[in-house]
Length: 278
Image 1 (tube, rainbow, N blue to C red):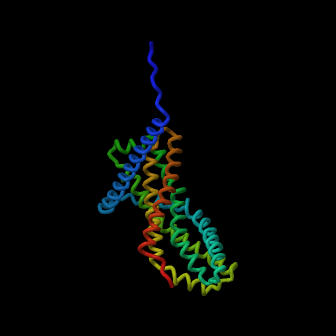
Image 2: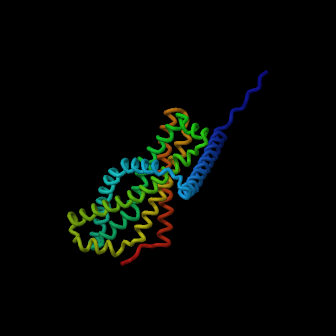
Image 3: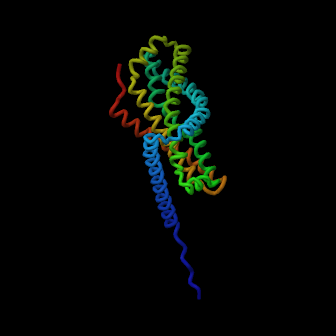
């Protein structure tokens, strides 16, 4: 007489799947932290020894610029217009039309520009990096580098990090410039705000500290994007399907990480550097 094997309950299956996913996520996070630490220390060492792959860094920076510069302008224009129109309606209701420059400018500098920069780098930039490294991984180029004693971190990851940290603040400045000009054009042309009052309130409320914080956030977002994209690309497996999965995971994780870090950074900034009142 055979004895029937009891089937696991649905609760146990769900618990096992959840615990397995949690452990896998922690391991992935640990590997990402390891890559980030090795990349930073390796970059400092390569620069000190004069062994940084500058040519590769310049090539990667140019590639990032070509895939993000035009989308940055196309995003900055409607963003500046939307902020100007939405905030302008509220300010007009309160009878404080002259404050439109301050509200619109602060919105673009503090939130719009760094977030748009992060999303562009997390979309186009992360996809390009993950696809490149993923294709190299499935073609066994990464294994060949390890066999020859060449570190993929020093040869491939560090130049991409340098390129990302160079391009991120440039994109941020471009988005600020275009977004503020777009908001100015709408405020002056469509909401009857005088040019003098717009720039006067903008200069009264916005400070250089706001711009530096915006640039710092763009650098942090760029660093997160390059670490995530490089990790997913170097761990790609399973052929072309694996490369596609790596690209998808890199983009999704980059965007989610940027949103979470921006929330924390905004709270810290609001606590220690509140908006200055004119």
